[in-house]
Structures are given as structure tokens and as C-alpha cells.
Image (cartoon, rainbow, N blue to C red; front, side, top):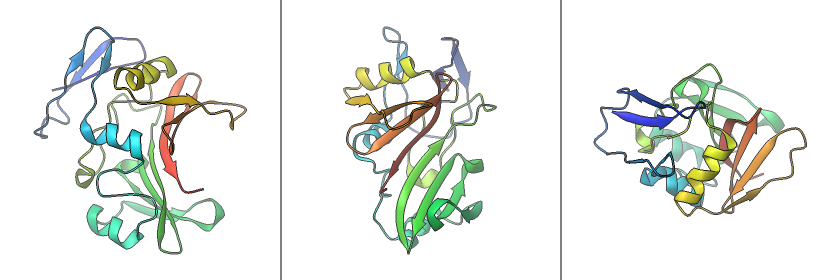
Length: 178
């Protein structure tokens, strides 16, 4: 059973991740979810399990399997998409340069990442800036405002991960080499 906070501060329950052996804990005091170890690791280091920016894309693809879609991104990068486009890897000249988790506003539940990442996302498109900050604070993950985006709210998490929001709702959490 998965428990998470939606944008209306109510508890949603679903069993779409019941197949995992890990257990989540609901923190009633803070109204957030305590971290799955791999999500906390991603937010702290920018590495998602064995996948990290700078590694050969062939190694990442061998871990994840064949992507659902491949396309072209900005600056000539190739984008490999998984999980209905919610999880993307961007690479250029054979080197992984982007790991991105994207949140579609029409999806109620958090995106389900490929099993090889061993990571469950405790956020959804209804996660507000304040809920995301509360999660970071509760798990002692440092953050600061990212002022590079003039028309959106963004946070820099640790040294390499960025979270962006639109209309106070989470849009993406990503790490990029550029």
C-alpha cells in the first residue's frame, strides 16, 4: 500500500507499487513521506541507483533495458524515455548528461520508475513547493531557491539536483551536466 500527500493535503492510497518489498512510513507530524533510500540518494547525489550523469549511455541502457521512446532534445541531445515519458535520460556523444523525473499534471499518482532504478517516487504533479520543501527538511536534505528561472519557481537540492514548479505544483526533478 502506497501512501502519499496530494495537493489538497489529503492521504491517497493505492496498491500500484504493492509488488515492491520495501516499506514506506507515513510521518503524521510533518505530513510528508519519509524517504525511500534511493530517492534520498538521488536528491543528495544526483545518482539514481547505479545510474549517474557522466556514465556511458550504453551502460545505463543495459541496466534499464530498451526505452519506450527515443527522440531528439535540445542542443542535439538524444532523449531516452521510460514510464510514459515521466523518466528520461538525455545523452550526447555516448555520455549520459541528464536524468529527469517529470510530473504530468493529468496523473494523480507518482510516476513509476523502471524497476532497475530501485527507486520509488514519493511525489506527484500535485506536490506543492511547500510540501516538497517539508520533505527535504524532514529528511535533512539541503536546498536553496534557484533564481535562474524567471517565470517559474525552482529549487536547487544539494549541489546538482533541481526541482521546478509551475503554479505551485511540481513539474520536474532532474540532474544535468549542463
